[in-house]
Length: 119
Image (cartoon, rainbow, N blue to C red; front, side):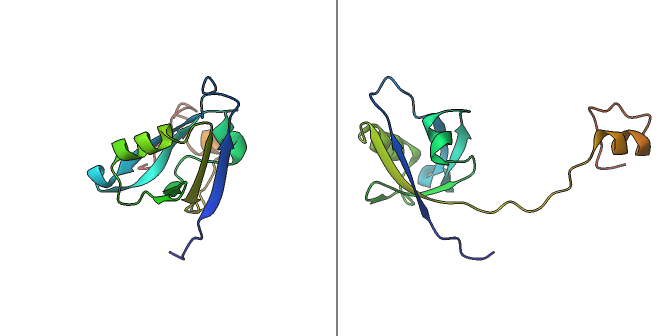
């Protein structure tokens, strides 16, 4: 996989009653990179360009790659109403999107909501 350059995501809110709109997972205590687990539709996070699966490298001026999930939660809480973080986006591999009519023609006995990859 080619090197991916980190880029800046900047979030600002008027006050703490506005939620950021993202969740994180991973961390050194899980021996996994810290990643964005979820992004709420139409949230500050989504509007800033944050995506599910982005790997968080830095929050503010702190490298978070060796921090636990709890430490990162504390760091984010101390950011107040502005968060700046560097993330790396791993490009998705191209995938095949199947049109429902194609699936129905190939598998007329299979309900259109279920397609087995093993048949």
